[in-house]
Length: 81
Image (cartoon, rainbow, N blue to C red):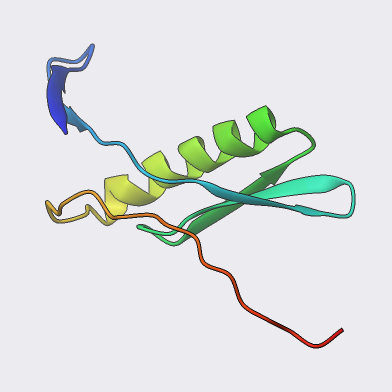
């Protein structure tokens, strides 16, 4: 997290958040697991840009407390086919 000044002189923070994407039919769905916001787009770039906008709007109303960056990992499972 770092502090920056906005054009209006307000002190703001810059936070790095995760985006998890998956494809649904002809669109990409992007979700921010730390906040719970979800958006979509026809390209990965559009989906992430839309998620960023949705998350910024959400955080204006419901700010996140200061927390450590989450640890992201993957794991395997065995399933019957």
